[in-house]
Image (cartoon, rainbow, N blue to C red; front, side, top):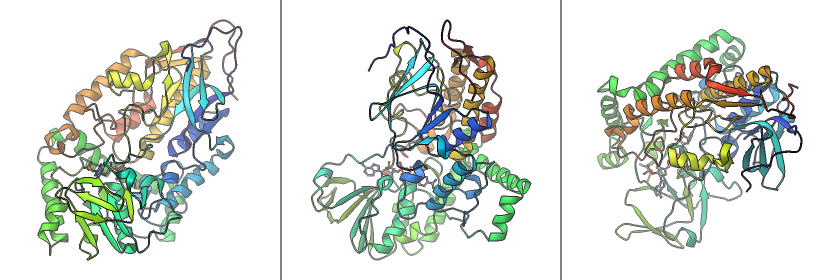
Length: 518
Ligand code: NAP
């Protein structure tokens, strides 16, 4: 791949003002912000055959949002059709369609279009994207909205290729396969598995769950939302906003507050862990051994906290087995665990998560900025970093929706609203100034990164309480880069009010025309 475009003979006008990569909620939210900023010459591309991103990919039985629905939505577009407090996956996907239609984004979306690389053209002040079919797409600005949980992680277990039965990852569910009456094995007990396992128990002749580390599960206050309440929520803005504010505060204290500022509130984590242990014992009163095996040794919140009223009880069913011995090997007909026990299996379900902020996967394609710098290489050598989780020096006109240190733990949609607004604000300002390149300056970027590193070191995720949790909130470099160590309020304020002086705005000299606002 060429990294140094040649000096042009004449100015080139990019095909689009903005190309957004990904038509999940990140890309959709970005499209809305561009529309609101009066920027209409944009294209949203997605490798999938439909919009929705994670909610298009994840259709395994039991998939549902695991925080209250009212908070898992954009503040400006109340979900009209959600039936429950914790909406099922299909309803969340339908909400993505609702937003796309409400903001007239459908015509701006091109599906089945996979971006495989992007190169900054310093001469023309534009990005050259290449798709899997070899097509070149040019844009003045590019926004990466590929999501944090994008690339499924398949377990690297000896013999998995030899397995003669069905293998499926939860993010690539095969709906044509009939799982009913089969001997099903689930590898993994994360936030996905705990939604899936009770559903599989309902249809399997035998269900074997291979657990490496247990998971904390809280009761799920789920109930149907009466239509009157839904109408009121949709139509009475102030009430909806008040409820969102209350939920935000709860999440800010319960997740961000405890996780980020836990060293200031000593004892809370231990108290939660003790309380959780007692709750597990109470729920599994008849089987102390099972309760002990299902109780994590790390503190609640080290991994994504999740909710279920069925998960723990499922393991008391006669045809369900919890296996905690490590998997040694997979054979053609089953799973062999340490000690030599053989577990015959027809279907192997990998609920083994995703590759998060790993080299080669984040970003999932090479992105070459100024001076031939490749983003993945840069992050690998210098640690994952981005100003407010959105922009990186030497990558002009490029913005990220789910970048390092961008997500204050809670709702991804709350983050998307903040980071997409940040990107749209910077792009709009570039248009206003007639600039063709906007780039975060080194100093404010470094100051932000320094603050995240200092705060990050104090977070619960790097503390003793999470030492054995293997949480993906800490990446392979030992950094809690997937999380912004701040409250939601700070995330909202920082992205809405960052000073424009933090960016440099420059105009392509000579013959290249400035971008036009459509
Ligand atoms: P995850 O949290 O990364 O969990 C992966 C599980 O697989 C863990 O239990 C892990 O064990 C196990 N595992 C991985 N490799 C293994 C191996 N080689 N052998 C045995 N076990 C192995 O992934 P996830 O459950 O898919 O959840 C990912 C994220 O998706 C969540 O944290 C959440 O953010 C999101 N999610 C959201 C919703 C929603 O409703 N919004 C629902 C589901 C998921 P260890 O613990 O030992 O590593």
